[in-house]
Length: 129
Image (cartoon, rainbow, N blue to C red; front, side):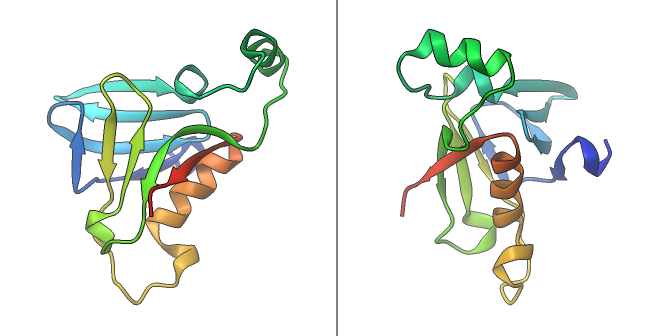
């Protein structure tokens, strides 16, 4: 998978799907390699849409999308390998990020890069901190 397709990384832990070994966050979806098979979650399907929901979904099909459409929650307060994103799937999928040097500037951290990719697609996550 190329970087144009999304941000690829090896998560430190994933809850909600068994044996996940790879993760990709693309502007429009989350893709996880679980037990050797790729599973994809569309952010448009799990987003908390503002009212009137049907109108907003129809507008999104035409290309309109607010830049603040929530698809989950995040906690970036912890050390790198304990930072996570919890997505609004059923059951919730929680992706804990890979470990990285603590002295890395915020903009180049995996946490910040995931948030930037979500923002590219018009999505975001709520801060639990």
